[in-house]
Length: 265
Ligand code: KIV
Ligand code: NA
Image (cartoon, rainbow, N blue to C red; front, side):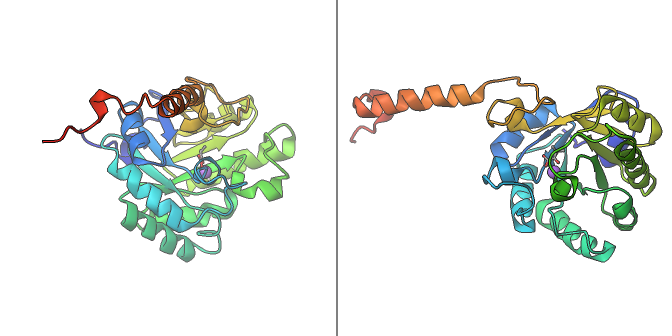
């Protein structure tokens, strides 16, 4: 099966909604790949995989290691890797150095970076030099300290105008798609109508050109349940039950059984 391409994703504007989920590991990538148009190696792996308090401590090394694993575990979906905080902001050249390393070390098809007007020049710089960029506007978790928490954006005119201006700026700069996170529903819809490339919503609007969730949230594997998450499975309960049975079997000397032991020659 041939991988979906960046132009094919861009061409989905206003068409069949894009299906995107996060993946950080090879097995999860293998399981999600047949169902997804895009697999995102999100810097949310900081909290989800490493138990960090935010995405800010995530390193380029971490993103490269997990990005490579997800590329190895997928054949169909377009793989996009998040640029971590501190790896791209100071200049377009800085961003190119970091992003080209991600492309070389992971084999991913493109990168995602947070920010709007302030990042437009960087989006254009990378796009014109062979690095497809997915934008990310609205509630941008790397800016949590500026935003004053994980606050829904667009409830007031100032943030509504900012989200719209940011989305326009990165789309006009050449982003092939834009994640719109944590905005009031009318803004998600208005941004989708305003920009030429697909929007991918998370806590945004069903009007977006696609949707993304953190796979662990959707699977019930992570304890956080914000309003925008719909749980499609309760994997935590499945794991708890399996570990309970395993512990009981070991303590009762019921495992290993006949089928799990090696007979002598
Ligand atoms: O890091 C991440 O998982 C993300 C998505 C939720 C959009 O950026
Ligand atoms: Na992210």
